[in-house]
Each structure stands twice: as C-alpha cells, then as structure tokens.
Image (spheres, rainbow, N blue to C red):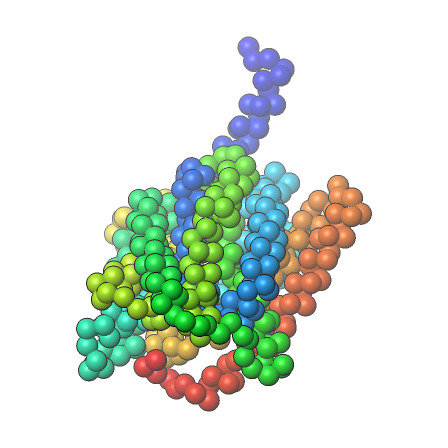
Length: 443
C-alpha cells in the first residue's frame, strides 16, 4: 500500500504522463524526448549560423568598440533573463504549452493566439529567406575563387541552395530527428569560424592601419545605431523558444534552463571571437559576409565557404521546424509513422511549397537583409522581450514585489519603444537600398 507521502508524487507523475500523451496527440512531431544537451545544441545551431559572419559589419561597424562590446554584454544578459521567463511559462495552471501561440492564447485569448502565430511565422520565414541568401553567397564565393567569367550568378546559387535544403527537409521529419546532425552542424560552424578568425587576424597583422570611425551624418548614425541594436537582439534570440523547449525531457523548465546556460556560455564564445576578430581586422569596412573580406589560400577559403553553406542547410531546418510542425499536424496523419507514405507525400508537397516560396523571394530580393531587420523589429523584439515580461506579470504578478514589477514593466516599455524605432530604421534602409539594387540582382 502506498504511503501518504508518496501519493502527491505519484499524482504529479501521473499528471505529467497524461499531459505528455495529450501533447503528443496534438502534434505530428515528437515532444518531451530529448536530453537537455541535445536541446542546447539546437540553440547553439541557431546561435552559430552563418549570420555570425556578418556581425562585425552590421553590429560592430555602426556601434564601434565601446558601444558594440557593451551592447553584446547588456543584450546578452537581458536575453538570458527573458528566455528564462519564457521557459518558466512552459506550464501554466497545470497545462503544458508546446508552442508560443499556445502560451499567448492561454494568457491573452484567441486574438493574441493568432497575432503571435502571425508574428512568429512571418519572422521565421524572413529569417529562413536570409539564410538561403547567405548560403547562396557562400556558393558564389566558392565559384569566384576559381572563375571570373561570371556565369554562375547569385540567383542561380540561391536556387541550388533551395534544392539542397529541400532534400534535407524531406528526410528529417522533425527537430528531434536531427540528433547527430547537430554535431555535424557544430563541426561545420567551427570550421568556418576558425577560418574566419585565423584569416582575419592574419590580415589584421599585415595591415598598417584601420579606420574604426563611424561614418555618416548624425541622422544616419542614429538610424544605424537603432538597426544595430535590433541585430543584437537577433544575434541572441530565435523567437521560437517554446517550440524548442517542447522537445526537452522532464523536468521541462530545469532542463531548458540548462540548455540556455549552454547556449549563453559555450555557444557564444565563438560568436564573440569571430565578430571581434573581424572588426579588429577590417574596422568600419567590415563586410556583411566576412569570408568575402579575408585573404588566404584558396583551399582554406573554399573550406570555410563549403562549411558555411552546409551549416546553413541545417540551420534552415531548425528555423523552419515550427512551420513544418504546423503543416505536418494539419495535413499529415499524426497517428502514423512520419515515414509512412501519406506523411512522406505531405512533407514533399507542404515543405516543397514553403521552400519554393522562400527560395524565390531570396532570389528576387537578394538584398533582403533590410527586410529581415524590419520583421525582426516588429516580431523578434516583442516575442523576446515585450511579451515574456508582460506575460510573466500577468501570470506571476501577485507574487512579485514592487521592485520586481517595476523591472518587468521597464523592459516592456523600453523594448516596446525600441521595436517601432527599429522598424522605422529598417524601412529607411529599404528605401535607400531599393534605389541601388534591382530584382534578381547578382550582388
């Protein structure tokens, strides 16, 4: 016979098991299966995507040494705290939520459910479009190392990237199935990071002088600073933490916190190294894709670009997973194996359509960085800072001290102002760049 002391524990375990079963039936993807370190490597994969090769140009160059370093530190600490808040909202009133929109819907109601869904997926769509452009730039960089005929243009390279991403998407049904691919992703990241750092340092040592001044008029500097701040937010956050947390084993919050500590410690060492090395070497002339600036043996630069291309394929799959989960759950058969004929066909059609759309947009507007900044301003900033702090106030407000409430409201107000300001800065950049670039441009 069970003791009175054992009964609450048994009831808690039974509730968790029933909730896991319920969640499993509501999604076509596996949940609650992955150890915390696997989830940590998912976070590191998003952190160390090829986007980091542009941070010396799009973050450090507009901010300079002092503001750039302080900005990385400040946004890093605030992002870690905000992600902790969001992780703690995984279970509310005894119900576990596996999607961001589910949390928002539970707290705010149906309208916020759909608004959050729209903000998140528009943002992830634009991020993935940017990833395809980066991969296309890596392919073109490889081509230009060996030929100057200009036959293989950027739109062609982007198309090739979309096809490769499609094959990967069809074969990997869900985020948990990445497993060993996360280790492969880490290896690829280390390759292009090491190549970028070593060649940047070599160039820096061979350069007599570098300009670290921030160019432009006072108005331009203000807008560029706001844009760089938005890029700082993106460098730490994906806007899909609840969907990643859905895959972690119990205890859901503690394991997610371990994964976050892994991301914000080990995961960011390489980000800082490549960003600061690139800015040190090239100063204000740092490019938005560092491997186009470095000088060195062809085979080394080729290795770096190949690694960057292949890692973006895996990163794309991670960022696309929330949309894949929605499509697979809506059109697939969740009670069948993900490798059943029906679910294979669903992946082929649904993911093929999604990849066709992102690839076409990437080829059409290869200067999409401004659009990514715009969607990041109106989505990642609210999803990362405004909503988590306000939701935490809604759920835990009665338990918080006056000082704690003031801190959370300060975050809501500050980032609530930063989001529209960053959106205006991004719109300004779009207007300026639209006068320079054209559709299907070969940049």
